[in-house]
Image 1 (tube, rainbow, N blue to C red):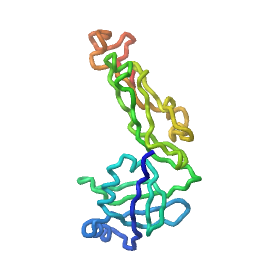
Image 2 (tube, rainbow, N blue to C red):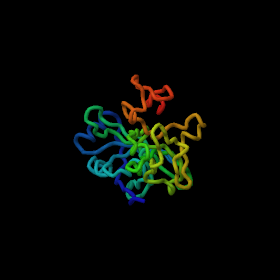
Image 3 (tube, rainbow, N blue to C red):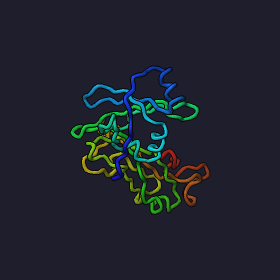
Image 4 (tube, rainbow, N blue to C red):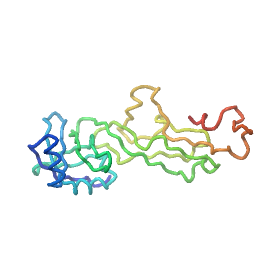
Length: 217
């Protein structure tokens, strides 16, 4: 588990578009808010440099952070982040308080492993990542930094779905709680254009009459 990221934040009284713009331009601060956890929302400000440095760590968006508000620690996760449409500069950030006894829902990155050993890829297939992150539910202490997806056994035309993902103890997938119809494909091994070694006819159809791309979808 990575070392917990700590952010020094300060309460702020000023609000509104003009005040937020002044904070960003003149004070080098990013406005934000901390809410949830059965407590009142608190408007905050934090250094844009500190935030930028913390964001360089992959775990920033998927781990429980330690917000230091006037010296008091507060566990929280990033819930939303507003960016400038042209510059990608952070304009506002929302933090959600977490409690040790309450499950949280958060997106964590997927790490695909054994791609160089994938049966389908070694046969000439192309690995297509249909997802790069996964929304999960778990208690804060069970939150993984990432979830591994092993593609070694996938062959051409095969997909690995949400229900196939091996999860750490105490972790569930939010989409699957909505029913079997939400068991989406996570990764697929597609046949390359032109097929594998002449197994397609001149019109690009497989022996079963379906194109490899259609079959993969």
